[in-house]
Amino acid sequence: MVRHPGRRHFVALILVAALGEGCDAPPAPPAARPEAPRSPPLSRASSTATPTATPPPITTASAAPPEVPPVAACTAPSRSASGLLDVRDDAALKRCGDPAVGARRPARPCGAGDPTSIPRKRLEAAVPALDPKTRAHVARIVAEGRAQGRRADVFGVVGDSMSISGAYLSALAREETTTLAPELEATFTVGDVSMLARFRGVAAITRRGVAQDSFVAWRAARSGARVPWALRGGRDAPLRRMVRWLSPAVAFVLFGGNDAAFYATDTETLVARFKEDLGHVVDALETAGVVPVLHTLARHGDAPGVPQCGIGEDGRPSDWRLMVRTNALSVAVVELACTRALPLIDLRDAFDTADAAGLSSDATHPSVHREGSGRLDAAGLRCGQNLRNYLTLRMLARLWPLL
Image 1 (cartoon, rainbow, N blue to C red):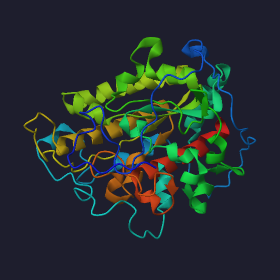
Image 2: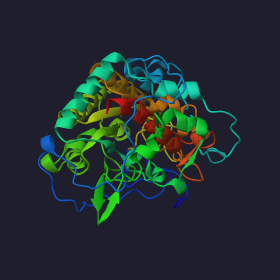
Image 3: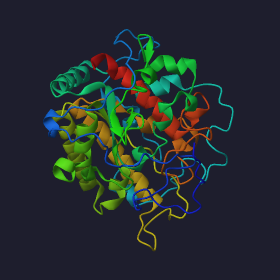
Image 4: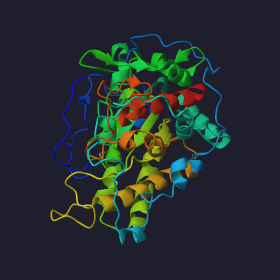
């Protein structure tokens, strides 16, 4: 695991294209063009990679603990949050408060304490069982995907620096960089097979003669990206390349931080534009037979070097403004998932259970445990990327019986 020192000067996620991914984050997978031959157009793509491991037999019985009642994404806990730091409209911009969700710089690395328990009920609520309407909609997308050659044992990733970071999922590709609490592994096990075993070692793509599984495969993600970037470029748009090269059955989609800062407009217009743009991404994935999994946004905290209120001398928006606007976009994601009957990970609510709301010292990107993002136990889940890695596996377990 390559370690990066914490930044001494904050650079907003949304203003610089090459922002670091937080303390301890390993380098992101290079976005080089794979050696696999070009596939047919998006609508009829199929993967050319040869699996390096035979996936375990498909089973549907779950070994997970009792489920929370199936609910729609509409009831995501963060949607109804009403604390002092959950304001989300332009009226809130007329005043200013302290957007800190923890110390300006964490007093000690996340997970350094001695956590005695895992907030199981809270994490279950962040990835609830799918309600009947969502199950039916996902089943329709999966059926279309089968007709187009999508692979149940492959998933893709679409997003910004939160997702291009190597700390997101890459550590799960190898057993030696993964530490599991048995009670957690049971929650992403279907039948007798965990989602780690299901996807680890199954080639999603071949690059430079090396087969890569979904945990480390090429991603339609880039630091500084806003939602429209995913579909920019016609046939060679990042999302379309990801679908051609990997042919995944599922795609994990996370945008919003950059959109919140780059669009100089009122919050209502920002939300409408964001929902429209994200809707186009959903449309493209569904048409291609890929199930979109949406995420609420991590909080924006009290960032070093950024004014708390107003606009800085360099023109950068304040922490308070970014907090209000990311709050609004997070709720917009819930509303879109609700309207479209899509699976949703309530990342924001889950991150609130972690140290400093899951944020690193830049108060923008997810934190990483000092022993790496593959540590999935009570200590590891005090860190943002470790927690997101767990939630991704949990969602795969929710979806697997339908794939």
